[in-house]
Length: 132
Image 1 (tube, rainbow, N blue to C red):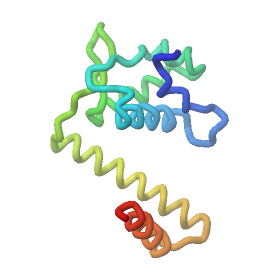
Image 2: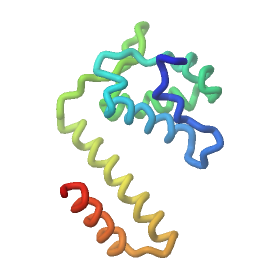
Image 3: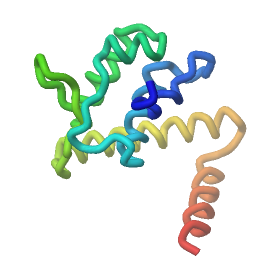
Image 4: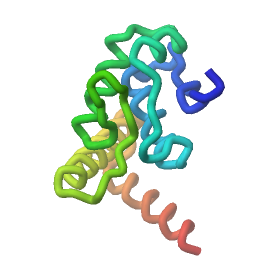
């Protein structure tokens, strides 16, 4: 599994669902350029066996990433990272993903007693600190 180091972050003991962990691992690997456009991913079965997770979970992640324009499955050949131009479809998927991230952050902050204003203030402080 040395070629699949990007998948090692999937942890069955983590409370985050496995499909979410695997999807995030693939997106992070693409963002970090550990997976590049044109790279072939392992088959659903290979990855499921290597990670000791259900093949349906891997298939679900691949399908979701294919719909979002991140991966492309070529029948009889395999699944590949797409060299995605900034299309309207890709942009819409990215905006939906960002909205989901923000929604989760708001829900988590609220569950811990913080307000949206608290979250906004902290986010602005982080952004300001990053630009310094």
